[in-house]
Length: 170
Image (cartoon, rainbow, N blue to C red; front, top):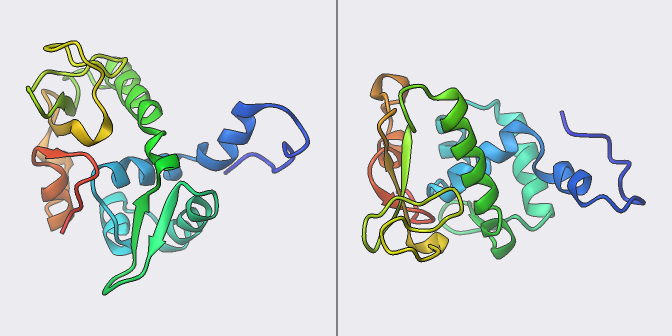
């Protein structure tokens, strides 16, 4: 449940940001958008989220300018530049979760696609030392990856193979 919308008249950037991305499904939707998920049904399949909740969260993210809703043969949701700016937050939360809640190691490794170096918690490549932009970031199964925990559908299969962030699935 999101915080009550009583922060419009307050100068608290954290509270305002939490109004948009502070609910767990919302950050998981954003994470999967980075992984290349774009279609409503694919988000629903991957996240096992109730469809009504997914529709509500997607509407919020579009209204707030985090995602765009694009018409075509199928409706697709894409991260906007504002949404892409959330990558350091998503990466930091994944890193924190890996450190404290993944005893077998990180389920996903985050690498510089150019040279294969792992990214440090600040988003720098440990091999070349450069900060790595989202479009040059690759995600792949890490040492704590357990295929038994993953789905075996086309969306899960695509997410669980090495791929650049933001590259569309399907």
